[in-house]
View 1 (cartoon, rainbow, N blue to C red):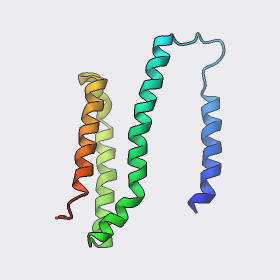
View 2: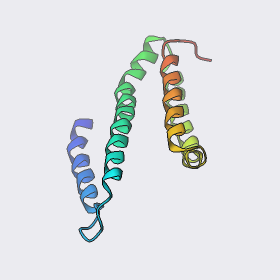
View 3: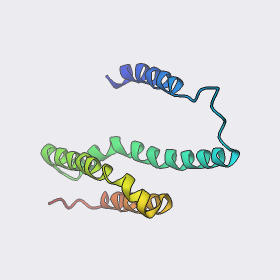
View 4: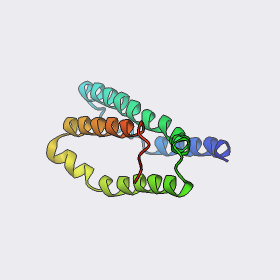
Length: 123
């Protein structure tokens, strides 16, 4: 199922990125911004890739710990729900405390999240 959807979704993403590109009439961004943009995207891609690579193995890990299907579902739904709730406020948090502090906090919270995977206590 997923293999069938990858190509059409990739094509749709590329089409939307092409349609959203800046027009030729816009002035190009300054070189300093381009350097910042490249470094930001590199770090963002690293963090996002770590999360995406971890995803498929979390279910198997929880299953190996002996959690029931219901408990695994509760953990996944809890994760998605917390993303929904905190995602509403993270932009304002970053505006107030700064982007760098927000990124560092994200990395620290993500590290703690990864550490919790080494313990099988639930409940």
